[in-house]
Amino acid sequence: MPNRQSSHPSARRSSMFRQRASGPATTDPRVSPRTRYVVDGHLTPAPEHVSVEESLAFAAEAPHRMVLSIFPRPTAGDVDSIAAAWELHPLLVEDLRNAGQRPKLERYGDVVFLVVRSARYLDDIEDVDFAEFHVLLRPNAITVLCQDDRWIDGQEVGDLYENSRDTVAHGDVTLLDDAHLLGLGPEAVLYRLLDAIVDGYQPVLRGLGVDKEQIETQVFSGDSAVTERVYRLSQEVIELQHATTSLQDVVAALRGGFERYGIPEPLRAYLQDVDDHLTRVTTRVSELREALTQILSVNATLVAQRQNEDMKKISGWAAILFAPTLIGAVYGMNFDIMPELHWRFGYPLAIAAMAALAVTLYVIFKRKRWM
Image (cartoon, rainbow, N blue to C red; front, top):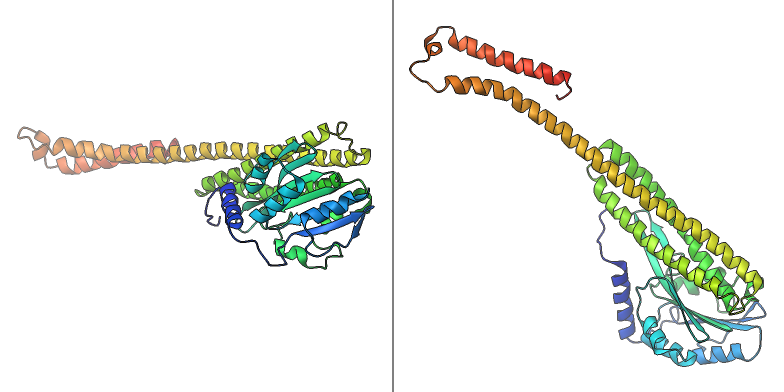
């Protein structure tokens, strides 16, 4: 298994975000915030470099309008702009400034704040790489902040700008390619985001499943390096379990607000489908974690058995060597009154006795499968 530098991903992301927030706002157009207008379920070109306030004003001018804003690399200035335009609660602003959070859902008046985490499997280093997204939702508007410089599929955020602003670019395909759903409001965009994240867990599970099968082969082949691999894979599975179970709580909270917040009936069915897929994912993750625990237990048993076999061999050879040593020690005392010391056949007889005892013990231990 390739070597990996171990550091907690949440700490890495928090440090990354603090570096971005403390530095000057970026002027690179490929990483500037992108805004998409939707009218009656169809994409409408948005002005270049439109502000957060202007986009919200556009969405509020008429019904069936919606604005989607994606911040690939949110800076402190971006968060300040969003907080001012959306009139966010100070606690919510503090959450937006801090990455490295578990999936959660919080409501502040008519604003819904979500933290969600996508995952991708890196086969070359056998690692699960997570990307964190902060989502703000209100009537006619949704904003997505990418906290790890990557989109849901793991692609670099700069590649979100491959196409022109009036077409469906990479990233928009995930959220804005279904006019029927877009007509249901910003909750539909949130559904597409959650659906894409949950679907992205499936390749991760397949990769972890392959690793588990390889580990099982290593365990029964007696590979001494397998224990470390089991522990590392268990760590990845545990972190994936934290992400999926927390996301399950988020989806449950969204479903709990169907009646109270008037979610359209067709969208409820879609969200139910996401919940079903997520349930299967969490079940599979739990099974993987349990299987790795069992593998670790089996490996410990096999190691103990191999150590027991080694101890049997060591004990057998020690007993075989003890018999000649005992005879040699007795006659090595060299007392004056020891008739065998002056006997002509004493030495050959001692050697013969040593050999006979050693051979006898070897045969006994061999039959008992100690040797």
